[in-house]
Length: 187
Image 1: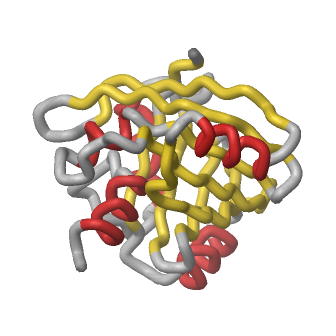
Image 2 (image 1 turned 180 degrees about the vertical axis):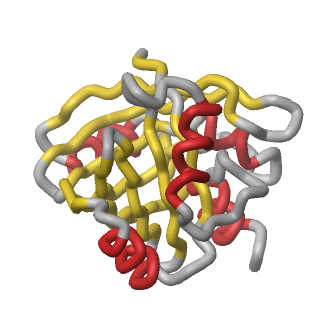
Image 3 (image 1 turned 180 degrees about the horizontal axis):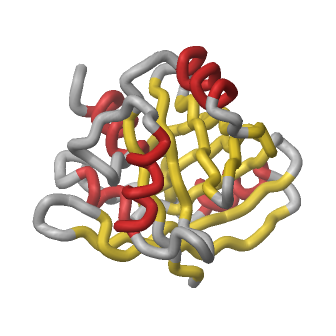
């Protein structure tokens, strides 16, 4: 399993305004792609329990630009405030997302949620800003650990220094929890 640090924050402006801000401040767009994740859980999981505990049991079928497909497991540990203190992932490439979906259904897993994440990556001075448009509804910025920004504190400091208008109350936004609660708790 590969362990890595990252922070994810909600943005307080529109995607258009965020992209304009990044361009004005000389960030260069270096990549863009679509990540389509379908979360599966065992059929017998009780959906009325803690969403984070439910998500810990999930296996993802991930497609990137509908060209590369993976079965993936995401591992996360949380503190008492639901901040992520350790995370990692393990994945295996598969030839077909349809075969992966069928396989999970065969071993009695059911679809839990789906997250379609349109990602644009901007870079300046070794800092990569991942702009994430989740399910055409939520805008987040994610910063992943690299050699220069190799601690949570350095990533937060770097994000703060950009001047991006974001919600400073949560550096560990959990996209899957938001989508889960939207689907199962807010009905």
